[in-house]
Every structure is written in structure tokens, then in C-alpha cells.
Length: 352
Image (cartoon, rainbow, N blue to C red; front, top):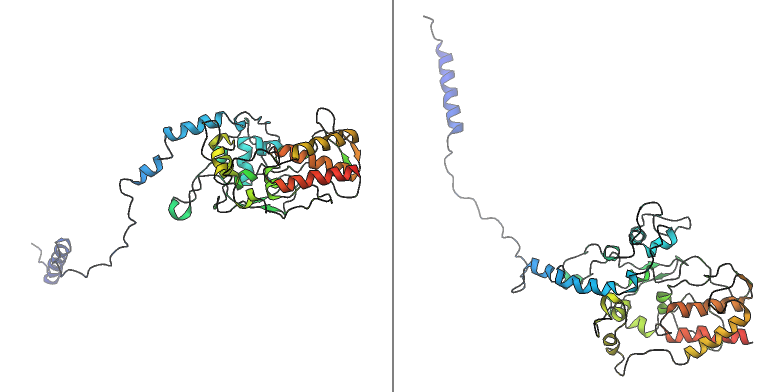
């Protein structure tokens, strides 16, 4: 039998006691000091939880009237024009998303639609205009309706000029989303005051979309004449109203307002208590007079299309102004004083 080394035995026993001590429950010490109180949460609204407030808009019962209104609107039937960049940026759902996302810049430096990115081309729809909320604190930050952009818009014709439609009727600038397309496209230059001008296309003019620039009081051909031009942004519909307020107001009979984008009498009556304006006094007669002068000058034909050719500055400018009022499609209501000045001064220039 071997002798056990006493120091080794004592070392083994000591290690055993140490291991037992490490795995046994420690002796409970005195309680620590209380932690700092947390920040109180925001009081909820009685009877409304977070989900309920979202469902008030994100529900079939809320969306179905919107979808029905949209189905009756011009945007539901407008051609999408495939993926041709200059058209797709406003006529194509995917192209409009690209325009707002700056995913494609054309040779002139303008944000437009990616001409090669899609095998389909859909008309503008829900996902074109709406994406996600910037804030859910609607009480303090406002409800942005999840529109894709509320930023000020650089214009196609001159990116150094910016339109930002924000006022008391549209504090967030939701109408800026409309400006992205409701502006003249950059296919033609505004004729100058002196040099002859060549009209190269039967589609010459601001091309369907000068509503925002008419509202702003810019982008017409400023022919000098007896009628003074109002200051930029001074029109009543620019300072006291907005695209959203007039075109998406409470419906009158279910066929206007909202996502039909047809101006409603209900919206008009908030300011025009004696009744909504239907036209600018005398403008229709002046438009007929200017049309006759342009027909005689040869810059337009009986079908209303522009006739390619080289024209004097006065004829070219007057043709641009005539098409601006025609394409604005508000009978001058967007900006009455600016509309009257453009047409009256054009008539004077051609009759001199």
C-alpha cells in the first residue's frame, strides 16, 4: 500500500470545498437602492387603441369609396404610354415612382422614368401616389396621407424655378405631389420677345399640364401690353387654397371631390359664399378672338393643332399663351388676372 502524501491530500480537500462553495446558493445580501423611475407614457384616447386609429383609414369600408371614385376619374383611363421616359414619368405608375425616387436621370439632367426597367406599364394608381407615413404623430406632425412626396418641385422647363404649394389650407404641402406632373413638360421652349421662332411639332405648347404654373402665375409668354401681370404666387387660389382643398374636398353628390379630383361646390362655398366661379368674365370671348387671329396667322389649324413653320415672335408667343389657357382647362379660374393678361396682351400684339 502506497503512502498518501499529506500535503497533496490537504490540497485535494481544499479544492473540493471551494467547488462546493461556488455551486451553492450565495448568502442573500441586503436589498439594493431603488432604480430611477421611467418616463410616463403618452395618455391614450379613451375608447381608441393604436390599431383602431389605423383601421379608421386602413379598412375596406374606408377604401371602397376611394376606389369607386378613382374608377370614375381621368387618371384611371389615361394612357400609360409604355416606358418611353418623357411620357412614362407621368403616365406610368412605375415611371412616376422612379420620377419621385430619382432612380433615373435623363440626358438633360431631369429625374424621369427608367425606360428599360419594366415589362409592364400601368396607369397611375394607388401605389404611384402613396407609400408610407413619415410620422404617426398626426396630432403634432399632421397627417401626410402617406403620399410619396411633399417636397417642393423643380420645374421641367427650368429646374432653377421651384414651386412649393404650402399655405394654411395645405400646411404640409400635399399639393406638391400634384405639381410633379401638372406642369409644362420640357419638350418646347417658351418663345422669346424678339426673334422668329420655329414651331417644329403639331403638339407645340405646354402639353396638357400647366395647372401648377398657371396657379403660380409663371411660364406664360409675358407679352408687353395694356394688361398688367399679377405678381408671382399672388392669386387667391394660390394664397388661400390648394390643389387638395379644391379638387379633393367633400363630395357634393358622390361624383365629385375626393379621388375623382373634380372640384366640388362644397369646397368652393367655403370661400365663395355667393356661389362657385365657373369662368372668368370675358375670357371665353377673348379666347375666340385670339383663336381667329392665330388661324389667320397660320400657326394653328381648324382642328386646333399647331402648324409647324417659322413665325414671328408675336405669333409664336401668342400661340403659346393660347395653348397655355386651353391646356390649363380651368377657364382661367386657377389664376384669373394672369389668364386675362396673357390673352388680352396676345390679342393686342397680333392686332397692332
